[in-house]
Image (cartoon, rainbow, N blue to C red):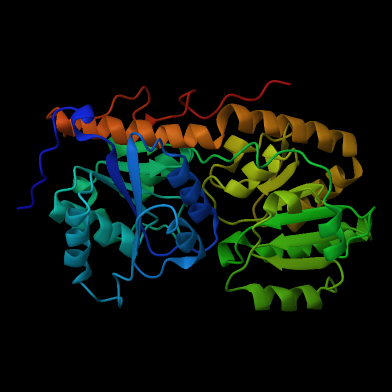
Length: 412
């Protein structure tokens, strides 16, 4: 039988809580970028964060290694079960008080099992997607009883996790994604980048910021671009992100005669500056939870045209801060893009409403506060001998959503 070590009876007796975030690696991606922001912004008088990458650190992990304790290289091969004891030993050595696994798969399984072996008081799992690649498989579902919290990024996402992914509803905490509204703010077009990307000064520009993976459905974006060009021949398209489909998508762009209209920019560290050049942000995904890219664009006062999937409709309010279209419909996607490219006044109104929403409900500090509150409350429950007590919640899911069911529509 596995036992937790007994936490102190008062948080203040322990000092700052040692929180270890467990992930496979830290490439440049939405979830990973959010994790960097979370780690940096935690109140270090109350929390001492550490990062554990089961494989390599990746570029973002190497950056964090200059700021906090980091660990990597624990998983040498897929079937290496000895990782459990190595990871548990590391957690004991580091005197970890809480672990948060980020994403599904190996890190979710080994992270939680090792934490249980090590007697870590708080065990939490953060999930950022609906379905693949964050599908919670059978082995991970078996560990639900030892998990204190499942973290969802939006209210519908939380309900999805409870209904379809084996996550205990009473343990689900909704902590919406957030963005830095100072870093992502309205700004004049970056003329140096405009020249670098070879964009004409008067060319309407549509952008998409997403990893080049199947679920993001960039092929829909490219097919819609063909339709947009029929109505607006000088329209240009910026694709920010990289991934396994890059070669395939570049080939498709050529077949669609878009080579001169589409720029594949790869991974960028200057997304706010790139956003300064676009007129509309598109999202063409099959599957989403609460994508960060649309929040970043909205914070920069850019209107959004997105597929109505996952929890996107909680951020993009159709007809107020952007448009929602049917998944897979290139006709709808192209039509709404054309409309906003041609109606600059409406696009500007949508952009203002979007930024207002992000400031009120999706700032990075609200996300950080949600994590801080969740970790402290669960730890205090354990310290007070109430480990089995369900968190209080007005709607059955523990939530940091101030409105309960979804978010209030922005006024304006």
